[in-house]
Length: 125
Image (cartoon, rainbow, N blue to C red; front, side, top):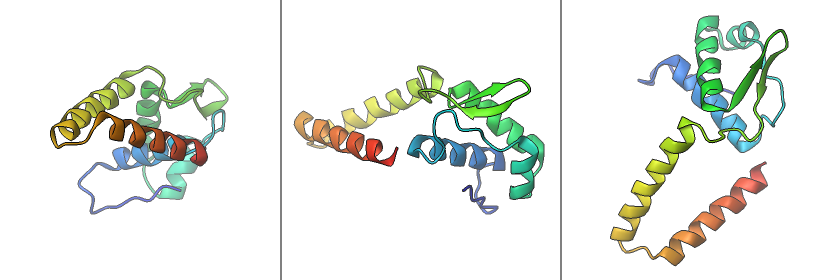
């Protein structure tokens, strides 16, 4: 599920957040699936529950998860939505496209690449 690397320079909560985001994006955690409780996930990873809580809150803010009082944390519908994470990724995409065009890639090649990535993404879900 989630692997932590204590030699990684990134804080543990970011590793947990990135791992959970990856599971949601790839469809390993599907829309509406309930995630483990903060305590259960913290125990399974042998880390502080506050670390899990921080990762859950960050992912909720990005639109990947939703918390329901008294029920738990669930994968959000249409994970990612139109939030700040989407805007940051679109900015990165714009920068990458600009550089790839500069390096000689054609708009047709870029479109084919996006279509290919979309097809791979759909099959993962």
